[in-house]
Length: 300
Picture (cartoon, rainbow, N blue to C red):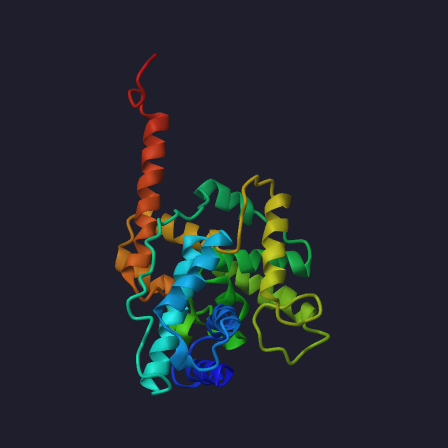
């Protein structure tokens, strides 16, 4: 009874709500932990679960020093699951309805300066793989795509003559993002001189970016790659695959782009998610002011 309901819920997320595979895996991971806790209480039916069981479970997460963000996500997963149980009449009452999500402080994302981005992207194109690396990072910074979106691009998603890329993001939402001249040139070089060499062993591959075997690049492979490139380019910063996305958004806003346009390009469903980049811009302005204004600091 317990397991079957969870299986039905995950099926509902995939078929009826059309959520992305990674999102469903996240729900599954959270709810399997919750399920194991419920089973440990000798409960065999979801109707036996009450609000106190959920609170006890969340307390165990706190005792394991889980972050506020992790606990908040877990509560969202549990609430969504119990809502499903109620709507499908598997249970009579939604016992999660008054469980509140803890407020979390928003951490500002790490961003690179324009100079640091230029340093990162100054890749010597002397092999098919280095040409591909240059094209990938130029496209990432030019569009603000998520890494999952970048590595899942198909050949027919890129339209260089028209200057845009078609991307399918979270929740299978499609969006069109413009590409600048520098990224277009890097992509043209990749498609003309590098990709044909890389796909020789796998000529029918349709993914845009491939590894040396001609197979699609994995998320983990890209993670390792961007860290390696950062080291080689002499950047002493912790760089993640999301760093260029954050930098893309921040630099647009610093140069006068409006928030709605940036929201659309990033594929955010809620503008409040995009607004964090305005805080990043303000922080950077304050830092620049303190550093360069002759009367910003009190003289000793």
